[in-house]
Image (tube, rainbow, N blue to C red; front, side, top):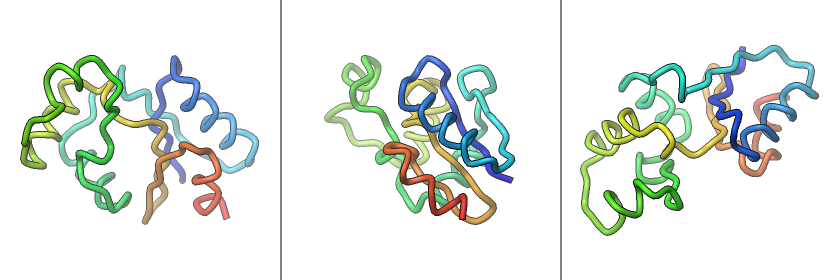
Length: 114
């Protein structure tokens, strides 16, 4: 089953959710601002996304600009920062059994639905 890591107040995340709803495929919604993601969950998503933690950070967030931008962090440190500041996570992320994609643009989700 698909899983979408969703922030209801984000326009791009709502577009990804709508795309999944219209696909007719079953999926689970994880509101990651309400349910804290654990380190292992983020590591699993990174593996499925084939990305490093720095690549899933929202650079336009104030916390990023004040506390992360221009500084060097190890991957495990960035994962801790995401856990403590989940708004930094790019969204939506859609996960299948073996792969995950950043759902912006929503067309990125299509390969998981087929």
